Length: 234
Ligand code: HEC
Image (tube, rainbow, N blue to C red; front, top):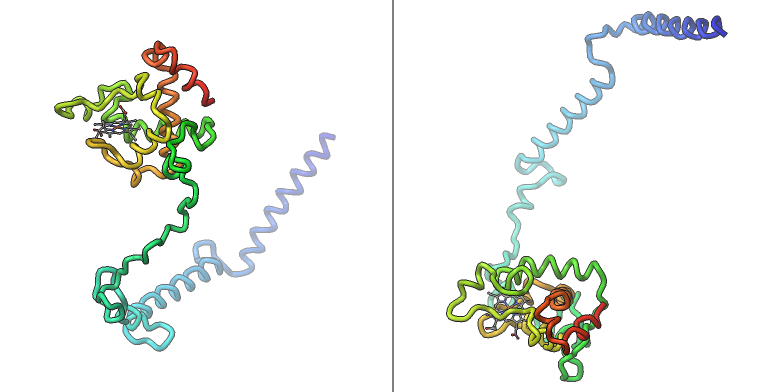
């Protein structure tokens, strides 16, 4: 067994010895570039030449960048001879909706069904929705209504003469979800609208999170009529 191991070692070292003279026989000294290095350098030089040629003017049909740069184009705020109002940017025709718009679902988009304000969330509540709601609430609502909706937000305390209302009150907890969604979407007298910052799902996520804040608020829990309602939404 001992001799076997020695044999293997001897064998591999012999291979190492033979490979070195073999290289020398090819007349490629160690410090000159290998064929692979030469190939890379050649490609780099060719690429650099193409780059330089590409930037120069009028070099044949295939590489005429200059003509591409200088061609006529319509800039967004430029004038246009094509349209009657003389502008490049055109107002979309009436009734145009974004490709990702939710249509024919007023419960989702307006918080109403057949004109009646809805009282149950039109989305199913899971931990991802609540997490998103908590995140958005922290960014957009906390400054005025406070971290847990109980007031004391840095902006809120400076809103004179009246501070924004406490959101974890029996009154707000008893407000239909559609009405909460409505004020987040369209704003109020002194509260800004958030339709531009929060998409439909995020607005409902904020409503769902607000309900969870209310459910865990002692002031809401103290009002027996409201605790069951907030807890209805798992
Ligand atoms: C710039 C301050 C400000 C911010 C930010 C703000 N609100 Fe308000 N909010 C108010 C004020 C002020 C009122 C009182 C109604 C009014 O004047 O518009 C109000 C009212 C409300 C009401 C109605 C409460 C009631 O008594 O019926 C709800 C619900 C509400 N806010 C939720 C939110 C949510 C959710 C957010 C975050 C998406 C938010 N607010 C962000 C200032 C703010």
